[in-house]
Structure formats: C-alpha cells, structure tokens
Length: 318
Image 1 (cartoon, one colour):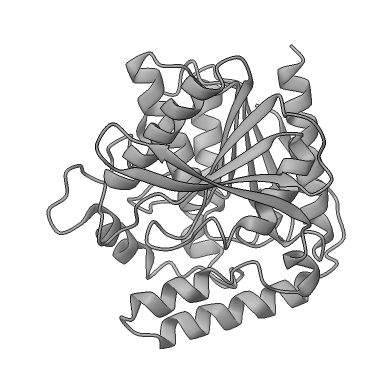
Image 2 (cartoon, rainbow, N blue to C red; image 1 turned 180 degrees about the vertical axis):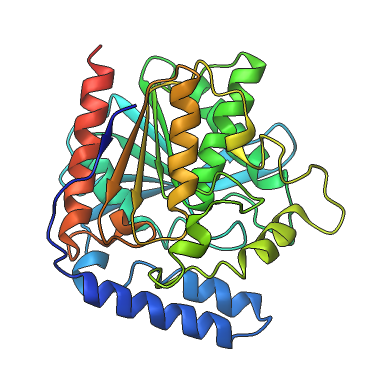
C-alpha cells in the first residue's frame, strides 16, 4: 500500500484553524437548532474570500430516482473550461449526514473539476434525522445509476469528503456486491469508515483537531441511523471498513494528521491493501479535517488537489 506524507509548509493554517474553532464553538452553542447547525456547516470552507472566489460555472440538474422523487444537483465546471468533458465525477458532500449541500461545497467542486479535468456533479442527497439511513445512501446509488446510464462512454469517478467519503466507500461495497459498474477510480477525503468509532486517533488526536469532537460522534451515528435503525453500525453500508474490500477500483484516500478520523483512513487503507485492492493513502502533516477544501489559502490543499489530478491521470491512462 503506497503511503505518502507530502512535505508542505502550513501557509494559511492558523487562519483555517481559527475559522474551524469558531464554527465548532457556534455549533455547540446552537443547541438543538438543526437549521442553525446546517447554516453553520455550509460555511465550513469560508475561511477567506479567495477560497469562495473559485470562478466556476454551475448548472442545475434534476436526477431521477427509482421512485417518484428527483434529486437536485449541480453540474460544476471551471469558468474557463472549453468543450465537453470526457470525465464525470459524482461528488458526495460531507456534513455528518445531517448537513452540507452542493452550494456549501461549490468552491471545492470547482477546484476539483479543474484539477481532474472532469465535470463534477454534486448531489443534494436526503439528510438525517428527517431521512435516516438508508435514504441518503439510496440517493447516492440512484445518482450513480443515472450517471452510468447518461454517460456510459465516459470515465466515471466517485468522490466525497467526511460523511460523503463514508457514502463513497459504502457505495463501492454495494455496487460491488450487486455486480454493478464500479467507478474507474474513487477519491475519499477524510472519510468516516467506522461508525462504531473505535479508532485510537479519536483519543490521541482530540487535542489537535480544531473542529471534530469525539464525544459528539456517537450522537451523530444515532441521528444517521434513526430511532428504529434498519442496520447496525457495523453493517458495511454504514461502516465501509467492515465490508469485503476485494476487487475495489483504484482508490486515493487523503487525510490530515491533525484530525481524530486519522485512523479511519489508516485502517481502511490497510484493510483494502491486505485484501488486494489498489489503494493509496496520502497523509498530510498538521492538516485538519477535509483540508483540501481550503485551497488556495492553505498551500497544502492546493498540493493535495494536484495529487488528485495526477493520481487520476495515472489510473485512467492505463
């Protein structure tokens, strides 16, 4: 299993950490007001004006599902992109399964589209607690089915961050088990892979992590699974670490070394490697949760996006 720890200076890190600490404090102060919590998490990447000024083109789209519903989504491309893309990337946003949106992730989506030379499609999947598991996962799978049917001749990619990284890896487990088309490659930024929360980094990294609180994570699992859970926390659709990780597509996991979910990436990558899947674990010193979304303020975030582009170029050229 290739492991890299890129040596990049922490330019912009203090600004990012101060911003995340403020969000953490305000989120804790909001009590049980879910609307406020969602608005705060939509400002996750708003640490500086240059982050929000990503210069992208956004087109709304409705994605049909197997039922009578449709999923709202955004097609995102850089503002200077010309010609039809040959790569399509389905992006699953983070937000602890209870928050997050395509709009809040738009700066990251634009920069990811530029780095990967792909059209990025960010979906507004259903959120808990109003729509507990498996509603959000079903939306992600329906969106993937739509992408495969709409762009069958293109390179198709799947990516997500945090809870969206969890959904990305859970989708791989489900698609493989059903014998459906897998992504040509997949990316997970700081994914949650074990919703029993048993990783050692939950304790060891707690003092370093400016945004995530290990004491809150069991409550997040309860909200995601709902009052009458249809699956236990160790179900592979809930905790991808528990899945059969043989036969996965090429996969890149990027994670900061200053976050409590560090072991979620480490253990998943180690398990996938043991089972023979092509996985690359990329760890970044001093970086917080989903640091890749803070480009260009945070210099390592820009380097991480470059790494994603090079990884995909190498995999898709084969």
